[in-house]
Amino acid sequence: MQINNLTLIAILVTCLLFTACSDDDDPKDIVRETRMEVSSETGVMYALFDDKQEHPIECMLVKTEESPDQWVPMAFGTIEGFTYERGHEYYLSVRKTILANPPADAYNCTYSLLKILSDRLVVEPEIPVDKEITSLDDIEYQALCPFDKYAINNLYIVNSEGMIRYADGHKMPGYDAARIYIEDVLPKDNSNWVKFHSVPYMAIYSYVASPLSDEIRLVRNESSGPMFKNVVPENEYHHIVNNMTSGEEIQYVMVLANVSKLGLQKVQFSIRKE
Image (cartoon, rainbow, N blue to C red; front, side, top):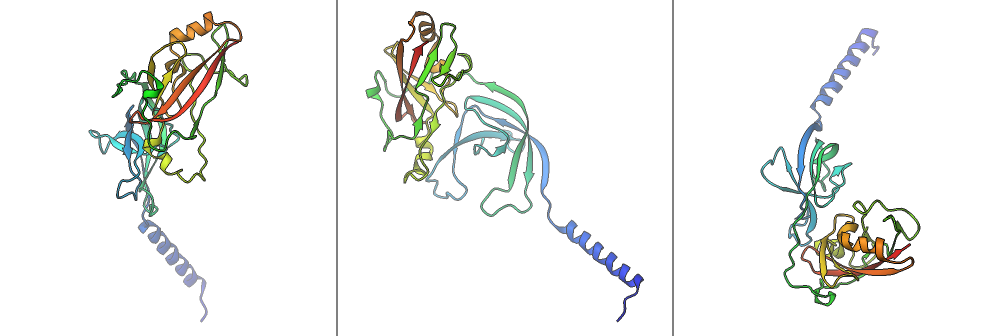
């Protein structure tokens, strides 16, 4: 059977109309801008399929337009382009995408940062300790600890102008902005890798033993480590800058601790006067 040009055009038009109708019937992602408040404190959540809640995970706490009166747990890294720092309170503009066909093993929404509308460092009150800690021997440890999960730089060099450098010569930010970075170095082939990345093994606090003081202080670590000024308070820093002689070196000891203030691992670093 021969098909003339008019018939062929009619068939093509019908196919296009059918395709257009089919596309319109397909579900579409819903994308919109929304605002989100992020708490300076963290919470605990569980993985999507952890029905027995056996593996708690530290997470952010957020208030959204859908839950303006309730803090809702949200995993770190959920908001693309946003890095959370413990102790900071944020107000964000984010792009929320409700997926028409979400993966079976994931949530039905994705988020990406549009703008940080506000970022405020919340000054935390003194951290209470349940038992009196007068020496490092008083610290109770979490089961299976200490183990070599964390590492820090072990030498900082300070000159008479107060400039701080790493041992390799790289300059650190000024005293008020410098940080002691805590690096997670536990290899993934460790048989306890999953267990050691649950909340009880996260370094939330640090007990600090100073060579210039008899007291044991407890400081809060942010997501990447404590601020240098919290570990080495201003009076001790001034002593290092103004009173130590060239080449003199002192050593600080930190016992990393979890959210329950149980010890995880002892680390130490030295400060040398240039």
